[in-house]
Length: 352
Image 1 (tube, rainbow, N blue to C red):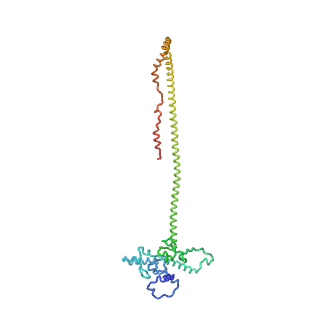
Image 2: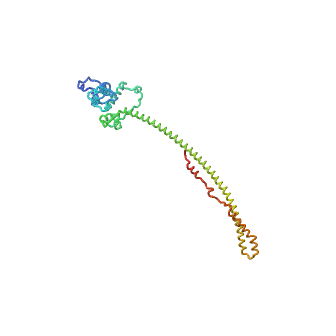
Image 3: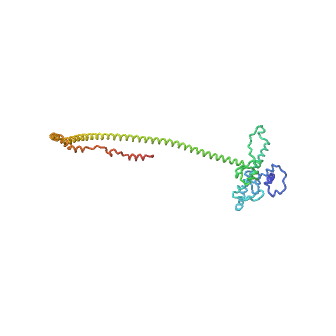
């Protein structure tokens, strides 16, 4: 720590002046204020503070001015465009392709300056606070946790590489020496802004999702209503078709029934006539067979000539008339139902 104070005291003093006689004794505040001053603008270092390879510090604005002025002067010297000269020790520092933005940020000095400024504000306030003067209790102030390794140090730095909080000593001398770090306050502000951005994006996404869900719900409701409506239309259409088919069925059955009754009546009449003829002829044949064996030749001749032969001749005369009676029967083709065109049309029933 003493070495750190000595480095702060020697910061900003050119090398050739260090060998000169020591200046008169000055206060600690003056020494610290001089140690944290920029050697270029002679003002207190402003964040972000950049550290040159020679360990001297500059404000980023001053470093940019030095680099820009050098670039104007050395416009034709391409080899020196990426160099910057320290205003303290006059040593040249070679910069990478990022220019001054590739220099290391001195977080330790920034933290020290912030603490020193708070100390000055408390000193100017008369070393008291309004709550003490009015005898009121101040609200509890958040105190950052201490480092597990360096108990006296607060966790005031966030390691970007390890994703954890650490202290200044861990960054300068400990495990996070070569890590990229950020001051907790800056990291907190950055993360807070990032969180707000992500929340805004999430809110917009949720809003869009709600609109999509709402549209899907409306589409689902509309589809269900359309389905019910179409179902009702189809049921009604097929109900009408069934009614038409049922009426047609009853009409055809009635037609067949009427035609069948007429033809059956004709068949009954024909059978009755044929029955009478068969009965009469059977009686003649029976009588003829009985008389043919009679021995009374007088009675035989009389019966045959006057009765049987005339009846047989009469039957023979009517033979052609009897055989030519119109045949009454059911014809298969007369009642053949042709449903092929209707079935073809029914099979073609579909949505538009």
